[in-house]
Length: 437
Image (cartoon, rainbow, N blue to C red; front, top):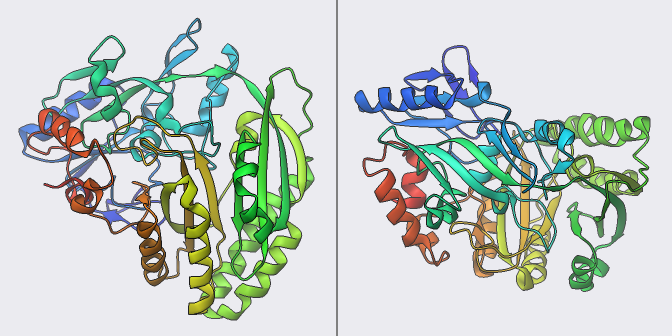
């Protein structure tokens, strides 16, 4: 968000910039005019949505385009179950837009504050071994190129570019419209259950295979995993949503209100972290409910944090997780945030963290007032040893040379970038680090 004085900061307070100017286009044509004006002045230009990336991927050193005024449906193809959205549309608004057509997004991440363009540009994903990240739902996109031209990419217009544009890191142009392949609206039957961590790790392949959506959280300093599994049901299925009062206690009072206070206290008195983590696994994570898909897949997170997440070959997650668990014990760190483990199917998107392999994701967090560097650097080394690829929107230390080794189509993506943005109109320091100048 941009604050008085012209300084833009991301949600996690891990990136900030004072751009030359901020513009608020209201239409694709408005974006086109802004790009042409920036080019005429020799300025770089970047679009931002919700600012939920922890890296500097959205930092605009010259011209910042705030896409908040570009939200809503552009069109619906009911027969093919496809919808086209303006690029700034926030994920949490999409279910209401799709409801009149009986449609839903196939999968969602656990946070829905991002814009659709930001989510796909950074590789946002949910969980479910048979489902890909949000970018795999993209069947078309329109962007403004560095030359100020409209470029439509879909199955009829340069389809060979879709695997690059669908997850383009903001490096290929400014997305103005995104077309998604949707599915009929559906319901999820969810079970949240605490289980012994060692039992979960021993039986992880079966737990993942037997559930449409499975993930688990582990609070360091405990021996319990908070598991979450969900099965997909037709929209006509009987719903048993969480009682309003109970949901408020779990998700607002405990998971956000009390947790925020404990995290803040832990910055001054780390000793409170371990007993609170043990208490947290006793008070949360034991419930069963059935509700419309987006209400189960997403949750509210208002405690500010910073995050690093790595995608591993699915078969490597247990030894990698075990190494992180041992590391925390060895260093005697007091880690206040849980470690989250999720899953996704292989895909063919060039820069997708799940490109060519079924993947497991290990995410580590720290309260935003803690310095995460020592913890993140040590965990990152473990992830790299196990074949990890970093989430593009979350903190990591990788560069073009190290990333190139991990993505078979990396050079193909760079070739498309050279073609669409030869003067690096859409570059910033982060993209120079991960893609080269």
